[in-house]
Length: 103
Image 1 (tube, rainbow, N blue to C red):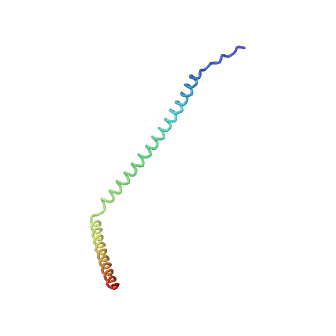
Image 2: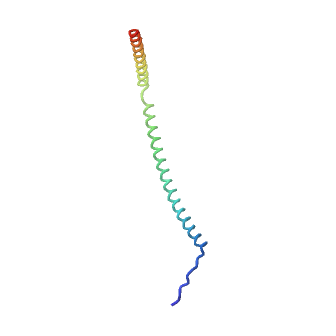
């Protein structure tokens, strides 16, 4: 039987081999991470495009609403502003009456 020759590795060669193994592992890990990031970026792009389409649809619907409705909305807001002012005036008068009674 022949004896197998063992390869002798110096400590420096062993260190280099270990470092190379770590480099290979980190490269594989970085490739995996970059692929995961690409998937996330693609998902974000799809969601962003979907939101943009929904926004555009909403704006088209809003623009298609008749102008009369908008005018009616403005008139209603003016009426509510008038009611608010009247209510504030009433409250002011009430406070003045209460302060006179208190004196």
